Image (cartoon, rainbow, N blue to C red; front, side, top):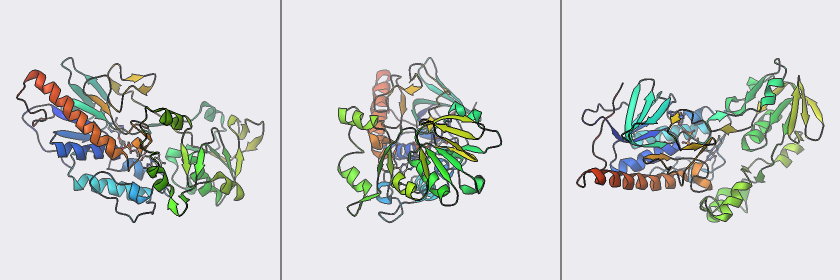
Amino acid sequence: MPIPARTADPTLDVLVIGAGQAGLALGHHLTTRGADFLLLDAGPEIGSSWRSRWDSLRLFSPAQYDSLPGLPFPAPADTHPGKDEVADYLAAYAAHFALPVRLNTPVVRMHRDPDGLFAATTPTGTVRARQVVVATGPFQTPHTPALADRLDPGVPQLHSSAYRNPTQLPGSGRVLVVGAANSGLQIAAELGATQPVTVAVGTRPTELPQRIAGRDLFFWLTRSGFFTVPAHTRIARRLRARGDLVIGTRSRRLRRRGIDFRPRLTDLAGRTATFADGSTVDVDAVVWATGYRPDHSWLHVPGVIVEGQVRHTAGVTDVPGLYFLGLPWQTCRGSALLGFVGADAEALAARLAADALRGSQRNDPGLDPWAAATITTA
Ligand SMILES: Cc1cc2nc3c(=O)[nH]c(=O)nc-3n(C[C@H](O)[C@H](O)[C@H](O)COP(=O)(O)OP(=O)(O)OC[C@H]3O[C@@H](n4cnc5c(N)ncnc54)[C@H](O)[C@@H]3O)c2cc1C
C-alpha cells in the first residue's frame, strides 16, 4: 500500500517493525487509537513468512482460534487452514483496515538519538519515531548444529525453513530428520510416505492428539486457560520448562508406518550418522528441524538484548519508547499464536498511548500525544 506523503512533523508517533500477524494486530489497535504509525516489513508481500513455509503445512490451531482482532478467519470452525490461506488472510486483514505497510523495507540498523527519538535505517531511507515496536517474529535465523559441516558434501541437507516438499530431496534413499518437534515430525511423516526415514530425537516434546472426546484439542486447552496463564506465575514457568507441545502428529503412529526413531544425533562423518545409544545409520539426505535463534544484531540500543535474549516485561523494555510484540511467552503461552496475539497487541497499544501521553505532557500539558507526524527519507 502506498504511504501517504507527509510534510509537517518529520517524526512518527509509532514505528512497527514487522508486518506479520503481531505487527498487523497492533496496527489495528493503533488505528483505533488514532496514532500516526507505519509498519515496515522486509518481505515482498504481507504473509510472506507463512507463504514460505512448506507446501503441505496446515495449522495445528483450528480456524475458530486463528482470528486477529476485528476480522474472523474465513474458514469453517474445526478445519485446519493451510499456510497459504493464512498468508491470504493476513493480506486481507491489512487491506480491510487500510493499514500503512511498507514492504521490501528491512530495518538494517536502529539506534536511539541523544534526544530520545529512534532512527531506523532501511535501504531506502531513515524513519524516525518517538516509539518503536519490534514485531519481527519468534523465528529469525535457522539454527543448524555445527556437526552439519561433517556431512559428506555430496549428501543434500537443508533446514526445515527451506523445506517445501519431497521433490527437493533424492526420491529414494534414507532421509535423516533431526528434531522431533512439530516441524520435524510433520516433515518426517510426509517424507516417510515415499522413502525410508530416520528421526533423531534430541528432546522428546509432549505429544497430544488433535482431537479429544469429540472436540479439537484447542477447545480443551483454551477452556483450561493453558494459553492465557500469565507467564510470571509458577504454573506457567513449569509449563514453559516442559518445552513445546507436538499437536496432532504422534511418533507412535509414525513408528507403526515404518519410520525409524533414534535418540539424539551425536556425530556425522561422511554419510554415517551416530546416535546417543551408539547406533549408526547411513543417510542419503538430511533435514535439520533444529529450530531457530533470535537475531537482533540490527538493534543498536544498549540494555535491550542481554545474552542474546530480549530483556522485557510483557513486551515493555527498560528503554523508554521501545517495545516488543509476538515474543514466545511474552505474556503467556498464546503470545506467539494467531488467535492470542491480539490480546497482547491491545494491551500494548494501551501502554504505548499511556506512555506517549506521559511523555508529551512533560513537554506541553496541552499537547495531543498522537498528533499528525511525518517520516523523513534520507
Ligand atoms: C512451522 C510453523 C507452524 C506454525 N503453526 C502455527 C499454528 O498452527 N497456529 C498458530 O497460531 N501459530 C503457529 N505458528 C506460530 C506463529 O503463529 C508463527 O510463527 C507466526 O508467523 C508468528 O507471527 P509474527 O508476526 O510474530 O512473526 P512473523 O510471521 O515471522 O512476521 C515477522 C515479520 O517481520 C519481518 N521482519 C523481520 N525482520 C525484519 C527487519 N529487520 N525489518 C523489517 N521487517 C522484518 C518479516 O519479514 C516478517 O514478515 C507456527 C510457526 C511455525 C514456524
